[in-house]
Length: 126
Image (cartoon, rainbow, N blue to C red; front, side, top):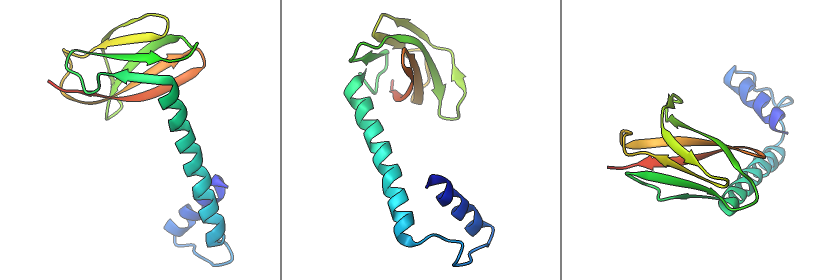
């Protein structure tokens, strides 16, 4: 379904908008609702199993997994996708990122855990 929607959007951008090629509004609406539902359920899982506090912060931020998973690594990126060197410590289900030497702004913390990878927003404020 997602592939069909993407193909349709690409065709519209290129000017190929023949009515027989485009799916009906109900099919598009159904696809959008399906994608929206998957994103929302993914966000619910994230909220249920992960905590990030205090956020915003000026000294340190703690990332905590509220399940039996273990944190393996933590990487920090700025909003343009550049990896930022950051100091952090990891215990089994908790990581502390020291942000006092970072410039104020928005960052993305990329947490690798025993079942995959999670990206969480992080705000540094001085």
